Length: 288
Image (cartoon, rainbow, N blue to C red; front, side, top):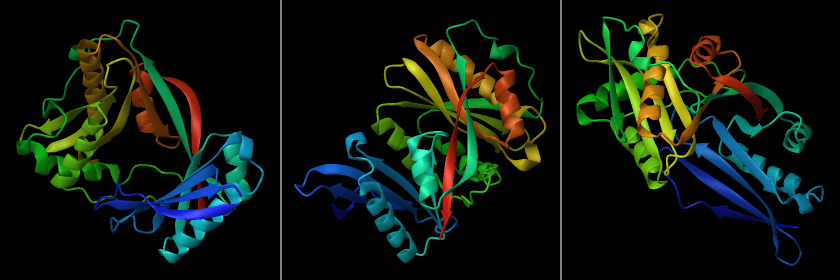
């Protein structure tokens, strides 16, 4: 078994990724591992692992060799923890547990069926101090600075035992994310709650729709700044996103979302809008 370290050329100012290839004695690839290293000052303690071994090549040491290489590099990079995803009861979970990882976060996945009749979001009772605005793709220049500030609403999002730290958001990062979605051919739609008094953004929700407008769309982030919570803004924004998806993508089958198990407020919002549980996934962590 030979392990070769590679460098992913798709690096950004917010992080880089290292890749390892496992090959057998004849040079045939049998597995890969990648390690994402955030470079944001609020996340430079963390590394994110992904391991893949061909089913026919498992239990021959490739995965273990890959993880050993990854952990050695993570330590050398000064990372204090490595996290990796896996579904419960799977071979992936058993592999991570055997290599010193423990379950640190449970995510509950839910889906809204758009093929059935839904409530009209326009009928939702709004709050007089806020109005909703929507945009496609990159945030409009007039709202960009305020939106970057509003992204701090994600800083206290429940994350179980995983210390994800905080991400530093600026206008360029917002544009980078929107550009990445567009380059994949997908559609990014954002709904934000704007404070009437000063025009600042108090909260937001993001929805990504497949290029052909079919299948299921995926919610990305939904958050409200702490000083504006308790006013029903999260539900109002998501309801408007649902309404917009129904109108613009009549062939869209559903909307997907995942929420931390201990994020009861957001789970309640999803349930009230008709999202129904589908499954659970987990994040496993190894402290170095």
